Amino acid sequence: MAKGKQTCKILKEIRKQIAAENDIKLVIEECTYQGDCLGTCPKCEAEVRYLERELEKRQRMGKAAVIAGMAVGTMFAATSCDKILPRPLEGDVPYIPDSIPSDSIPDDAILLENEVMALMSKATEKNDKSE
Amino acid sequence: MTKAKIFGVSRHRLTVDGEGVTTLVAFNGCPLRCKYCLNKTSWDMDKGRDYTPEMLFEEVKIDQLYFLATHGGVTFGGGEPLLQKEFIKEFRALCGPQWQIVVETSLHVPFETVQEMNDILDGYIVDIKDLNLEIYLAYTGKENPLVLKNLEWILQHNDPERIKVRVPHIPEYNTDEDVAKSVERLKAMGVVDIDEFQYIIR
Image (cartoon, rainbow over all chains, first blue to last red; front, side, top):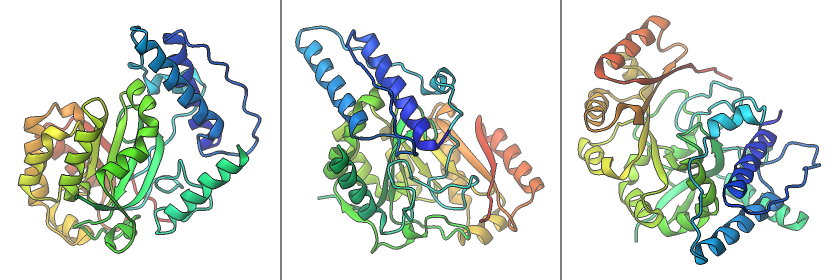
């Protein structure tokens, strides 16, 4: 499974668990996008914002919000994802055929070169338009 | 107003830079000149974007729910993040105690900096290179006694589980035997989380 899709699947699982723990109704539609993604998209982000609003509502009503204690490690197994290999952050050559912070950056980005910020902005714009 | 040059922000890193979901923030500026440095951009202080702690907080708090749910947070790398101690302190004041703040560091920073920052941080990923002085010098251009002093100090003042030490096999600079010696010394120092791995030159 492509890295972005794996990230998406894990994050989705986290959202599902937060919703379940707090009795929040969250209907997650199956993503039909075929290519790899950045691990998130406007639709996924909208779900996060929805959960935040619902949790705030519950807190205002005096209910406790349960948003801790979710172990990402176990979600790799729960979602049948391979563990996403670690990448170095600083210095040196990577030991997997990948580069550094790519999660939110398009695949064709020259990662961590000075163009990255511009590419990130473009990616955001692209996502906003496709929303 | 505290500002720092940041050349990369990467969201949704899963268990690779610490617990849970993390966002990596990469600072410009590094005291080392590692021969195989992947992020040579970090050497150039003219590149990257100027951030204040407030700007960064506003940008990364989008993932607060994931951080809180998974005991994640922000990992500062670079470059050498501990060169930006005031920035990280101010950032901690903004994000509060619930976010995990981890640094990916060479520990090649003043001893006083390590002492000053220890209470701010939740964890360390130490890029130790090689413990052999000659190998370290050849590979980074700097000596490592300061690194070892800092590592000893953080081991004495933290739960060792909070300190991951990465020990690379560095082509043309160290051998498997050198790495084994580094690992042995690290264990003797009290390091319990050792990540031994291979650099692959592309």
